[in-house]
Amino acid sequence: MSFPKKGKFFPDPNGGSGGAPGERDFASVVAAALHRALGPTHAGVKTVAAWTGANERTVKNWFSGRYGPNGEHLAALVQHSDDVLIAFLALAGRWELMVAIKLAAAEQAVMEVLIALRALAHDREDRHMDSADIPASAGALPAAR
Image (cartoon, rainbow, N blue to C red; front, side):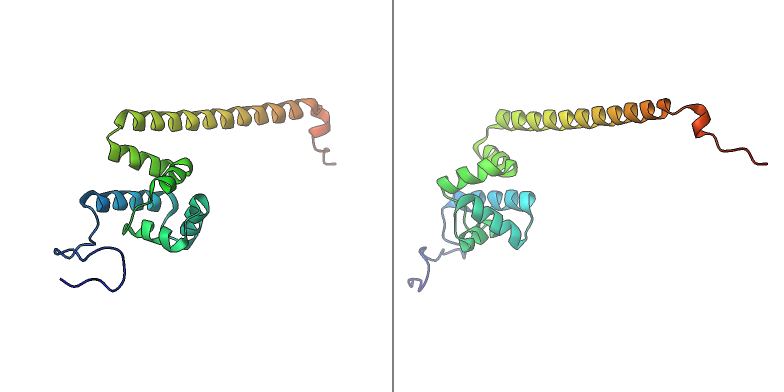
């Protein structure tokens, strides 16, 4: 076996990356969550770099699933992305917390719909009141002679 010229891992005899057995699963789950949250664009890489303070090359490795973030960076990702939080909870087997997060998101969506409906109803009332203030004779067209 020869030593690698670059990198910090020994070559894996099976042709893998040489990381720990669960490391690839973690990295691929985080990568999938990042893609769901931000898409595969360079703008997503820049956004995650800004959230975490990590180097863009490091963030690209997270997006590719080659490596996963360390604890400090994972905490920053979870703070900004519900997709990463849910992926992390799934890895940890904390299904009840995932349900609570999804329930809170659904509650927020319902509140936003109610606010929009109330605004729409208020606008309709205002338009109805404005048309009621105009006398019927003022809205009529002059008679043709």
